[in-house]
Length: 368
Image 1: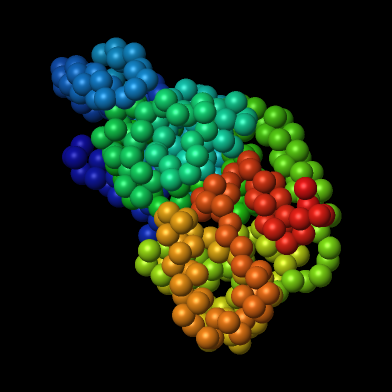
Image 2 (image 1 turned 90 degrees about the vertical axis):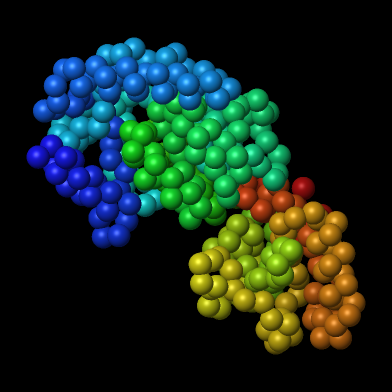
């Protein structure tokens, strides 16, 4: 009977309209309908397992007492009992899931390096983070690595004994089932363009309890970007943004990092309206015919990989193709490579720097 009820609750908590639902974890909830002897066995086993896991995490948490390890997920009905005021924070994440935090998280793990600076800006810290192709913030350099964002090491993540995991939408949702099984609450965030970064900062401010500081920080970012945008002449420059990797080229849409910055600066992306690549809503298929037809005045190139190799490959493509030579951006030497620090992953709180970088390439006298 108990197993049947557990299975029913598990199914109800995992899926809703095909979306994985991460149940809320509340400390102080206990197994019901299980004998005390079984509880003690589970508790001792859990304490021993967690103590072993913690040996693999750079920042060790104190091994939990037997009493604390008895705390497990409450039932579906009990989980939603109580008003929002009885929780430290109630947050709607970017999967539309309502996540209720009973207390302020003290051991946060993030699955994207782009979360680090925004979280730190509102007083947050982490015990675990992924490696990064771009620069790592100083405060996070000595934190435990949980692998690369594309291949998170679940064992290392769990070993950090997190009380909150911040998951990168579109990349790491597959971790939710494992986190749920281990009673670890998670927030799923998509911090890619500037508007989503501001929303992410608001959420991080709730997580850290520094809501007013979050609002002030967002105002500071807005003012920095507004100053740059106002310094750019209003000329409706026609631009194209190519993304170059070892697998080839794609065209970046307005929803991409570089696309959102270009749009904010008042540039016209010739790719707007193009159909996105399946599985990649921020990019469209590349074709030289499209470039020739659209005749962009300016070409920005974002990249993943060694920038020297990317440049060498692009320059060879341009030199070997007469069609490339007809494009105004190429003929007039208006081809610019954007930095990976600001345009490969979300720059987060460095979005003003991304605006400044792109603007200064076109208007070096106006944008300082």
